[in-house]
Structure formats: structure tokens, C-alpha cells
Image (cartoon, rainbow, N blue to C red):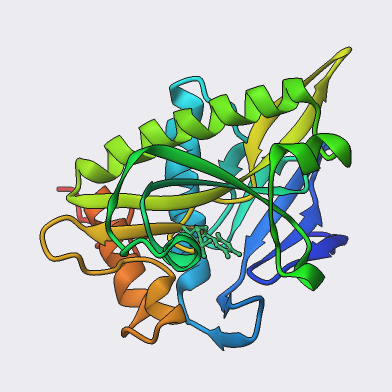
Length: 253
Ligand code: TMP
């Protein structure tokens, strides 16, 4: 294959120019970072797992009419996605208190929230992605009021879908982060789910034991991140089938 042009390299993914205009190849690295890259490691197999898991979630969303950037998986580490203009917000949906919300508001981790709470952070690594309100978003023109209505609706639909899918395999969706992109179809523009949805960007707890099956395993040194993500992939039936028996040629009489 011809050498591709790298468009952008982030902490966990690399974006290359896609084969058609308006497409991008998204490559999942094995790198893990936390606390705005203060903590770093390479975790063998993470990229392969996240490529599969993000494919699984995005395909499911596409199938129920929640538009995403996902087109198709290309290989173990790469997927073809639509090129979007990323809205510079991290959209977080929380069903149970955890992480920064527990710290900020003094609510014990695991406390069920009265309803899903949506938060917005301004995507800026140098500032550490600070929490912002809709006032900031409107005043600084990061998104319009119509965009914010659409973003809220997408975020809640993703939450309902993800909560149900995870619940069915004995996992509680505590919270997650998504990113939203703008695409242009002729004269129209619309917003779609972009980036990735994986255990890197969700909090997933086993319903029975409370065991953490997400990036907190890495953030908090709780054991093997690969084992945790593999468990999620296994339960969802999306394990990469490396060990699938290869059918041998058989003699036909
Ligand atoms: P937080 O409790 O640290 O604010 O995280 C909320 C959710 O957002 C959690 O599921 C992890 C995810 N997240 C990201 O995907 N990227 C980030 O940079 C951060 C800080 C959180």
C-alpha cells in the first residue's frame, strides 16, 4: 500500500489521510496515558482491543440511527471513519458519581445520580481540559445553541444504548466521554459521534463484584489493563479471534 499521510497524532491514536476525500484512517496505538499524559505506558494489545470495541459500539449506534463517523474496520488496528470537524468539547455523561465529579462535589464513588448528568470540558491539553458551562460554550462560539441541543440529544441516546448493552453483559456504565464532529452533506451540516468509544473513555464496573474494567485500572494501578479490556470484549463477543482454528485442506475422496 502507498505510504499514507499522517494528519494528526494524539495520545492513543494516529489519524492518516483516507483513501477517498472526506475519509480518515484511524490507527489505535498501544499507548496509555492518564492525568494529561503525566503517567504513560505502552500496553500490548490495547490498540487491537479498542479498535474492536469502538467498532462494536459505533456499529451498534449506527444500526439504531445514532449517526457516528464509523465506516468500517480495515484491520487489527485501523478503521475507516468519516472526516469531521471536531467540536472542541469533551462531552461526559454520568450515571453514578465517580472520578472528578466525586472529588469536586464530595459524593462517594458509586452513588447513583438522580438522573444522568451531562458535563462539558473544553478540549485543551495545555489547560487540562477544564470543565465549562454552556455559557462559556455560547459566549466563546465553540458551539451554537442548536449544536448544544443536538449534542445533548446524541449524548443521552449514546448513554441509553451503552447502558443497555453493558447491562446485558453484567457491567454497569458508570460514566463515559464522547466527542462530537460536524460533517457537511451538500448544503446541510449535522453532528455525529466521532473519536472512539472504548474502555479508555468509559467507566465500566462489574455489576456483581464492582471490579473495574476500564482505564481506571491503569490510572489507579489496579492490575492488568489488557485483562480488564479482554474481559469486556469477551463478554460482548467481540474478542479478536487470533486463535480461531485454521481450516486445513481436506482430502476429498
Ligand atoms: P473524570 O471523572 O476523570 O472527569 O472522567 C469522566 C469520564 O470521562 C470517564 O469515563 C473517563 C473519561 N475521560 C476521558 O475519556 N478522557 C479524559 O481525558 C478524562 C479526564 C476522562
